[in-house]
Length: 395
Ligand SMILES: Cc1ncc(COP(=O)(O)O)c(C=O)c1O
Image (cartoon, rainbow, N blue to C red; front, side, top):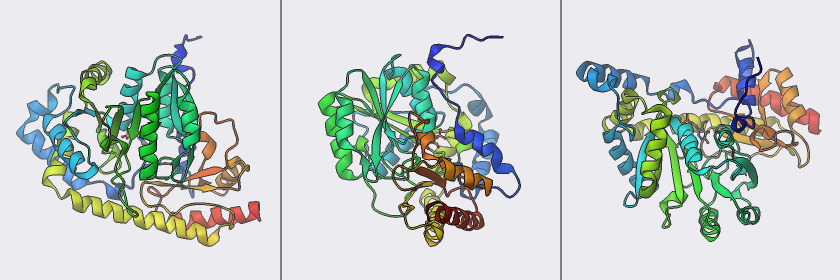
């Protein structure tokens, strides 16, 4: 049967990562290809106890329809939390609870992206959100990303074009690069957006997973015009299976986001919104964060040290300071695909940088490495295999 798929979905591509990860369960395979949290970081006991008690005490409230804005106590808790930890003010902003961060991107695209609009993204960027923009007919355009943030000249050139509906940016511990945009560049990005009248979609799922360096305020913390939509998630700090995220937007946009969410899934899970709220308020959230930061610090630095120990000196990679990823770069102009394919033959899964760009057919010298999911033993073995491979290929 020939199905008549809507034009808007024709540009959306299946995730190469999901395809690669099908191999991850083969015996002896080491996967640096995914992006999942370490299950040891899940607050399983807390979620079990909170859920059990909530179901015993207020089953009708949990099992009944909820409201699209989100569980009210969680919205209030998050306002206080984001004000205290990220410097985001709620005088002119409001917050809506979503089903994960992914839904924030989907709702923002639904509201802002007209068929044929250009959506600017960092190059490389996160595939899930790029696909959300594509699914509303957005045409993606990448802006080169450096270690301290996007290339400002390229950004200004891109901003000069007509029909830009959003600039999507992940300023802290970016997926896939692991890079963090400097405070100076964040200011300049905002100034340029002001100059050219562009809306910014700021994604910060990894900000709280900082284990090195200094905190940098999100772009949303200084948004006098109301041109920044800020998205966050409990997926990396608690657990992705909860599917709880949140979007902060100027008050004037709140109703539109609420209607867009109503049309999508009515509301997010009552039980897991309550679990997030209780966890933040009545369990030791700072202690939990400290423990997951220590866990990911150990793994991130182990991967960095082990690759450094074995790799050819011309393989470039930066020391991670947070998040789940680091990116290794072959010399400029060298496509990483043969490296990734050879690594796969040696039972190490990595993802080529080209997968995270707007045109995956173009060669790219980056290789994304995930350190949150593999065990320490796998990190040591996998890093040695990749290091040796780099010496053979670059030697
Ligand atoms: C940069 C970025 N944004 C958003 C998400 C979506 O996460 P979730 O929908 O689980 O909150 C991810 C997940 O990997 C991500 O890396």
